[in-house]
Length: 151
Picture 1 (cartoon, one colour):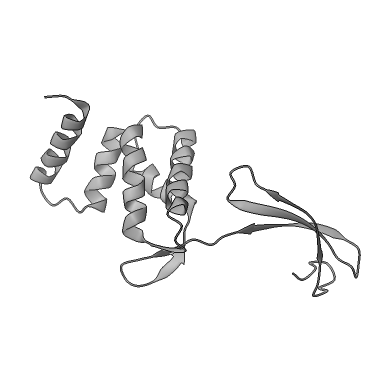
Picture 2 (picture 1 turned 90 degrees about the vertical axis):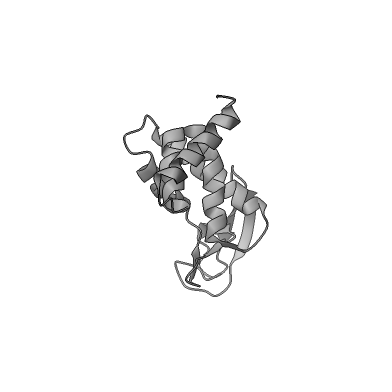
């Protein structure tokens, strides 16, 4: 690790701590050359492979933005969206893979979104699963009702 102040190529770790959510490690470092201290944060990069073959880093913000569009006009708070994003990231990271297909990210979104708001779930599912007719919506609504125990 290069010192951000004098660019010395070696630094020493003084203290290491896990962040509150456990997704990163914060390290307090010192430079033996200039003596200044600084903090770094290390995270494991989780890559998402898209259908086109392109890979990109996982982004919780991108998940929240997609769900926010599905929740437009619904009584869903920003805190709820942030919690959903965190739950999705936890599910994805729990799989233990360094690279995950984008369809698994979508599947990880569907469960928590269904619990959060059923209308937003239907909106998201209609795009994610590519609903093409009214029958697709009817089948999904029928399944939602069956899971709730409604007739």
